[in-house]
Length: 509
Image (cartoon, rainbow, N blue to C red):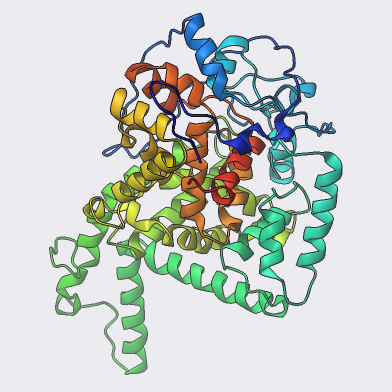
């Protein structure tokens, strides 16, 4: 896509980035906000710490870099929706209502962010008034922060989605098409659509009731079997033995020592010993507890002293423990809590009370399905295999080289920025730490709905993240670029997804 030139001339920006869609004049800059704080919760034993630095740019560099930025788009006007009672990424500053689309929809490179401090996302910062209001009003922060196209388009798409969901047999192709444009907030649409996209609900609506009942019952069985303390298991065995003795007409009321098997003894080191397994699980459970307590501390939904928040934390903990015990090859890896949080938030916020009450069970099965597509990324033994995380990061590098060889060469050859330094977290945590919570939900609509699969779509979005800040990257050195990529700047999500989609529809060559 990028045409080669002779001598020292640099390559042109792709033609599709110069589309008339982005041909309006940029708006005047608003007041400068405070910088975004660094994200937390990376896979601790395999993550990479950021390198602090400052990025100095001369006027010559700016003039040279300006050749690579497309004109700013002129979006339609959008109606303002009141923010819900939930705290989302409190570290980011609030913006005025007229800035919902990032100062009239312009997408910002890091250069723009540094010069005028413009931000494209509004943070919902209203606290929960009470536990009851939290349970009702946490439906989603997207209405206040998502860079949607227009209120009219949202209403139209919501009507189309509701119509599709009302069919006896749902057309998944049409559902994916509608969802890929962003799922409007409200009416519990996102919860139902995500369950369909993840294969948790069948296309035939007549099967929903029976499938949900079966899966929810199965999850309760998992909890009863896997979350029980060995002491309770021993007591149940004793009680069962006593009943058998009574049926046999025996007078003995207690177990004799000979009837306590080796595997039931707390000091047993046998591989099948329930006590030995219990002590081995303790370390994993302690790590899960620490991570759950750190999950979105800026959101009252997940954090705080309310019984509602505590209940939600307990649900996250239960899901992760059950998953770890059912998947001994992977168990729990730090960061899984960040992937689990959006699913549970959406399902627990379903206005359908029956679905909200069963959110823990629904989230568990959707979490398993979501991880099935890239679970090998969490297995350290497979890091260097063709299905491991390093192979996936290499694919991202090749994708960037295909679409923007100049930028690829500057990052990896000139400044020596290894993509593993920043892409490891991007890929393993599905971008949940690079954007605020509301924008993450919007991105996930696209990730889950793409028929090519989550991983292919994720790599295109990651590549687009590099391309839309190419001007600053080309002007930066190792330290500046590493800091920038580990602390990704605020970005118009609609344009980011537009560029990512263009990488598919406009292949290089």
